[in-house]
Image 1 (cartoon, rainbow, N blue to C red):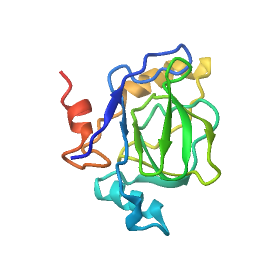
Image 2: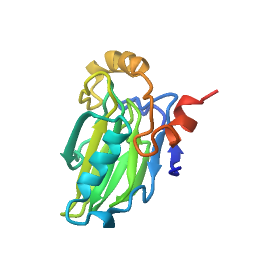
Image 3: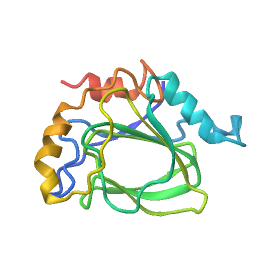
Length: 174
């Protein structure tokens, strides 16, 4: 079973974060040496195999603070590294590198503070509502907070399927 470290962030007044679900960081979640010519494919296959098939994409991470109020998001670092602030201004800065995965619950702020020129991220969402893009603007806040509360829990973990950290940290909360 994969290992992930949970981090629960509080509302910073702009980025609401998720009041009950922690962000999960999976260090060295995948061995990219098994396909060095196209490591992104390994993440795409892993996420799809575990049911995270909504809107899979390849790109980077936006350099401005943002979050999604209508969907959870998984980010697999296929190449390079980045300094990413998670949780908004009062959150925490993490260094993510090739092979790592970050699972962001709906509402969790994220921002690229600087990255290597070869950064490649594979993102995906569980089945359910389409994702939106929120920037922490005052006018979006009331509906965003309502949306976050309505996002369904995923049935599986994007890395470990039915045995992953989502089961422990999101689905089995007391």
